[in-house]
Length: 337
Ligand code: S5P
Image (cartoon, rainbow, N blue to C red; front, side, top):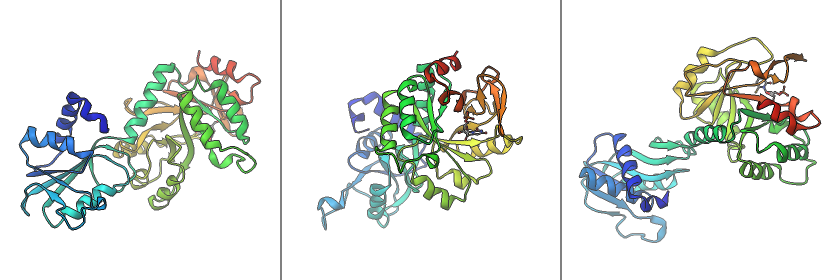
């Protein structure tokens, strides 16, 4: 993001797009350093005086913390490039709150790790959606590998062979036998996902109130791109996650939350990527992923398998048919045909 200053045309179009999202205001405040170029561009282009705040921690101490001229009644916008935890934006608020009338805060990129309400152009969820789309088309693969083996080493060994063919690797972290594994499984999984260019999904099927899901998600967020969530959660619960996949229907029982799931997803577009579903729903903005898929139609316990050729959604999720076979690479190639 700091390199944006090396691309003036891009900086300009980002500045214009961000400006369109802002309410009426009188002055604009950039948070150094990341927020300054974009705030200065908006200031000069739209004739809005600029101020900026100094970093308290950097020893300016009792000196002047706000540069530029302002009046108490000025409606002020705070601008930064990125919001992660929101620390520097909170500090700017602190410095400005009794000096001007803060009307909004805007950033270019929201990492979605903070509860502060900000306007933004892009967020983590957008990046996940974009990457999924690109991986699918670059690899020409609609295959999600469901790595439900208990032995982490076996998962790593299979991924080394099939990683280049798959778009996503899905796991259930709580089913893995990690205590008896000498390496750091998550580190290895991330390395493989980078080398072979696939996303990681934790099939957590969140179902609790937002207060709890926020805590649960914190434990896995650093390594998972996608995460599943039941369709009966509240919009508030959904707002705590990114890369969400709403369980619209299950392969093993006959229920469907089509309308609910769509409404829920529409209400939280910045948190949802799509659905786990047996049939295509929505208009294509959200992806549809289907589990319960094998080379042929069959029943195993309560799992209902459909023939992969019968599935018309965006992705198929396949577990046992791949990892129980003697040659996973050969089987993967069959699914991709
Ligand atoms: O409806 C569903 C939803 C999911 S996420 N049915 C499913 O089977 N799944 C998951 O897909 C299930 O938890 C498992 O991880 C995978 C299917 O694995 P397989 O071995 O039966 O292909």
